[in-house]
Length: 241
Image 1 (spheres, rainbow, N blue to C red):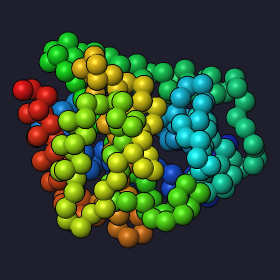
Image 2 (cartoon, helix red, strand yellow; image 1 turned 90 degrees about the vertical axis):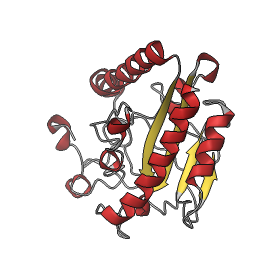
Image 3 (cartoon, rainbow, N blue to C red; image 1 turned 45 degrees about the vertical axis):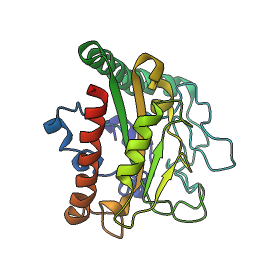
């Protein structure tokens, strides 16, 4: 949370930023050792959501609560700002896009272009996590693992099939494009006809955090990390063949 904005938010909310993909960078910190480039977002989605469209168009139209590019409520509809504002001024949205949104996406694009130039093919794996229960999105608990490929348009079917097969097992529930198909990143950058593939993996936080979804659980994390490693190994072999 940038210091120049921190004072605008509700102090209690700032002390418990629950709408956060906590510890995802730690969960995936094995990836560079496999030769995988790892990009980590550094700004809270309450400042600006890097996985929304820059023109703030909704990604879903099924009646779920959708927070905006610069949200004013959390996923449960609770106000984020101390003054209970109902919108962020457009000039401030543009400022945040300039300082946070566009630099992040320029780095994604630059990385994809460099890797494609070097290898001829590239896969963007977008890493996310979410609370097990978010009633404003889904009335029942989320599956453990949700693979999104924008209804089969952001990656070749083979890569999705490999991933779904590798995610199954260990008594974990696995879903495909339901209730998440992939956000702006997956939909915008995935161009399989140009050998740029994109997959989003959303996972319930209890796969690698404690039951309270507050603390990293090394034992749980190690189990899901092994599953991810095996999947990446097969995907790498597939892309290189």
